[in-house]
View (cartoon, rainbow, N blue to C red):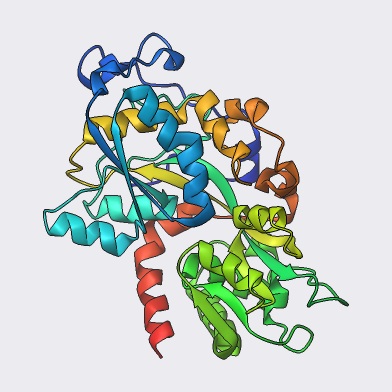
Length: 363
């Protein structure tokens, strides 16, 4: 499977709405009326639904924006869980004991896990894709937020020269001490190449030569890194002053600022990405999950997230409806400074690079 189109800055910014498939007349299609805003969720009343995300401020925001409003609108019984990693999804499906219905995953996860047979194909007779950039609509996942992996730092610790790009996380002379990075190749290898000296437009695709350069650069700071796996961890490490530099998801910084923690973001070289909704294979409440994704993808509902956390909507028709509460922290505000994640590369290559990353981490 290939992503529907090459994802570029031009494709993101232009009006790239897809034509939605004709709505089905029966089954799940009956949940929709003539327009997406006319969804009838009454047939779901009394059913159960388990939503899974990454905990912390992000899952709190999703609960406020999507999970609880859907629970109330559909009359379903909502449960939540955390950490929808590849390993957990695959293990659950292999064991024949799937108890999750919808998961928030990176789009690269949706590609790799879906192609391995562990996700349900999404039903685009049910899910209206109008307003979605085509590169964010795939067989096994549809985008739900735009977000960025940024460099954040303590302004009360780094008081003189400030980091000028994400590459400065490698500068242990000017910025000594521990730094925290995500234990994930998609976030680190592009940053390592920028630290080597490559320009943003030279990063993708990651050839074998570039991968070798990136891993060699990672070797330089490996001993100075506190690794994180959960989205709340780098924000916590910054708030307790255990690290002064952090690779972190931009939405987590808004909450620290709200709490009065003296942190700042460097957007130069940050990588802009999307999360996506996906459904594990043999989900016990697949019908509810598909309806939830259709409901959450509507423009007015996709816009809800920007009022809760500094992540932007994906549906372009949501942008005029989105709250300006976190406008200065939204990825789209700083578009020109960022590297755009190339899911056309990561989709088919993610599993192989992840295995290589895991071997590197163990050495």
